[in-house]
Figure 1 (spheres, rainbow, N blue to C red):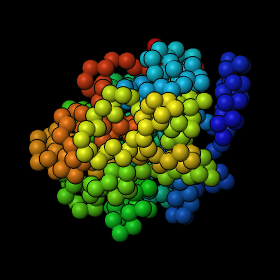
Figure 2: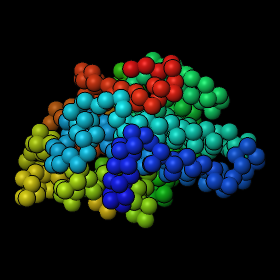
Figure 3: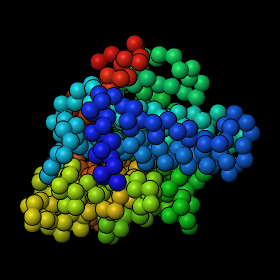
Length: 395
């Protein structure tokens, strides 16, 4: 898998274009289905599966699209930069003509295009539309994390140039999608959690909305949603944090056959001759005494570094979106001090709340947003290709 992607990137760079690797991204998600006609429930579900696939793989370089904000944050210790584009991310020095930048930006908008395909199906149920809107909210949250101000398009978009919206409007758009998803998605089925946690549910929307409310500074609303999830009885903190499936509210499932979850491999010594990241020393130093999260890190003598063991290394890592642990920390931040006490009793820790967030949620794609809330100002530029094709988009 890695060999093919390296070759593809080389060709794209050498030609100063995108055609070498972009063709596969133009495959229509509906395949032979006509989304403008009445489709069966099963056929609409197939379209939703295509959406979920795109959420896992926004582009040919999905692993770096997923990892972008974590690479920009302070949780990684680089072992090797095989590609200078990855080093640019780490050093906050990404030029507008960076090829990985372009793949990520357009990849998430292609995910949104697939979502709109589902939403335009005349026979799509309210629940199916709600699940699609959850995915649109998550796609826009990923774009917001990297670019903040982005064009907002809905299912009626007419393909004309559109100006980027304000940060506030982007977040409000995400909130509306999540409110709809929270009200209309299927409920989480705790008796079949392994399946239920792999598709958008009311609880998944509630958890993501709690995160967005926190970003907006609305801690009372964030805390209230977090409390609803904690008291639902559907999720619980694991005694062993390595066994976090029972904590998981939402994840997209990795698949070894499709090799669609490579971030675990990149965060392991196995990738040491390629692009490879260990855990930052400052992050590992937060594990003190009997903290149970010590099980999530493994020391490698060859590289003199700790590596995260949160994900598998067989290119089939799940894409974690929400866990109940985050809800405990949000509730604590909103003023429910007993939730921090309960959380720390299970984890056997005594860190400050912001340190608990950094350690507990490391490598789950939220650290960059925490850094921005604390004052980080770096924002990725728009890809030059996007600027060239949309005169209303300017760096």
